[in-house]
Image 1 (cartoon, rainbow, N blue to C red):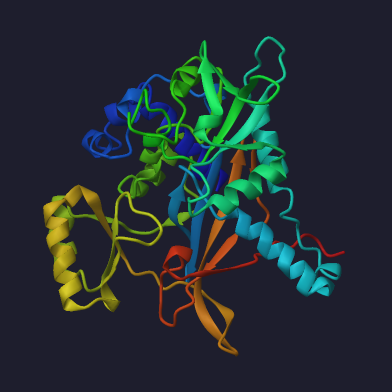
Image 2 (cartoon, rainbow, N blue to C red):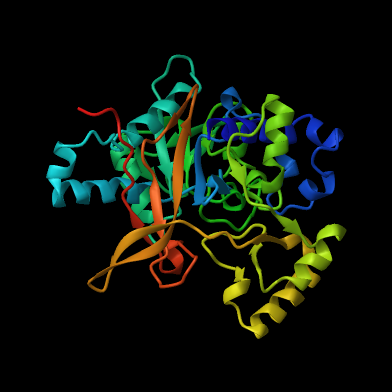
Length: 387
């Protein structure tokens, strides 16, 4: 996972500077420049210490051949609060399991996150500064996680209206006067972050924060523009990135991916939609998907029309038979399909949470594990040496 994240960070640094990987033809230029998530206005704007992916969530699956990466999440990966709360609940419910087994702790995640962000925080004339968690507000579906992490990290939970920019520095409004802010863990999408730079109608962001970012006076975690590395049409090229930037062979496998926009794949995809999984290239949360083997003829024809109309907007993959986990449903223990979201935190070094979010497809026969689609979650144990 560290290898993959290192390559993704190198890709982002390259794509927003010299674009050598495009010049050398390793990744098609048109594929990058046509992405909704590529922000050309961010080119040559480097984040502090060159860190783009401060928080990453890699979705892992396991089939008969072993582990493979299903998706890379380096924009605003969510779900870690469920990891922490699932563990807390189990410790209370079955304390004897934790007393007799050397299960590694997940409680350190907020501490490791603030430590990582503080390690690359700009120093401003020796002044004390704050780290904050920037939320869209209480109506956001992940607001519980925003408030939970802010509390555990010892940070202020703020909204855009709580911050302002003066002389390219970010400040928090307080009853005792403005306080300097040098780290913003933002849970707001790029286009809403700064109305002076992106969407002028945004009421969620902070006017001028991109200028402060450009000046190197604030860490924005994750970096602005990371969405291009989340684009599912870029995903098949991560192995190429590893070989190109790191001169290493990829360690983790990934799923074969087809593009309707590629002539070689076009006929295969349209003729085999009943066997494939089709995803929106920039989709998330399990929305905008077709699971061919479980779809009706009408759904398949609908997706065929969508793909033809917007070929760049979709990718297709074979249906991978996910591993299962025993799950208590309606008074019975039954198998349900799972994946695992692993969390990595990067400052001057990279730390991997010794656990993760096991996401469960609770509906019988379902492959969709996302909580937004009725999925559940489980605590994941990483065992140390025996006591």
